[in-house]
Length: 323
Image (cartoon, rainbow, N blue to C red; front, side, top):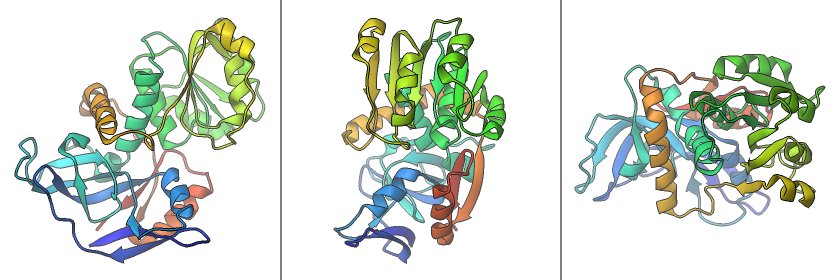
């Protein structure tokens, strides 16, 4: 079968599409014939950082049909349309834990389904599980044009949060975000974040911040927050070293929270998948999830897909199609 593989090298790993053996399903596993796989920036940076070790298949999300089920699996059967979160997902066949896959409604395409798992599981873990967003509270999402931000904004709007605020350097992207439930768009290239947040919240400040940018926005984020606010960091695309005014932390009784899958156990990862499925699949089934698919690439065009993602011009998800 075809698979996207990272080949370790002392100067940084390189990506290749290779022919490898089809996985063998175990008693408690499901084998899925993948039709699409979402692309994520973390896969690219991790591949580039791989300087030693055996070749490995990359990818953390997929959508396709169940091809085979293990002897101990009762919840799924051959032919079921599924999407899931896991490892080694950018391949024609993917081995999955039966608790880490979710049903795909017939009205949802493979490309749409493959864009759901990582973005929504990550965003749900940040917004609901860690951010503890409550209906009627306010939320701000930094760097609000990528896949996780797109999911976080929709989760917040559906919960529902009010107001839902998004920040981006692109006025064009902010305008497009209105269809995903954004009440207030903040253009970070020319507007004061703190002033805009305080105006939108009646000077109260924002309850939950979902931050992907890091250092450049950290101080403004803290200044923008309400008493009892929760600051959840997902990524540090703009830098990782920031200064914290402990007086602000103290007076506002803030919670600073970091989230990642890299230091989670397999059981904790499955719990994240299950929590997202519990809360978000009803919205998927009744058609209230709005899709933001920027572009799709064939699996064989993986280098072009990586180059396009690293330009940071995309809006929403980039997806690989798998023949």
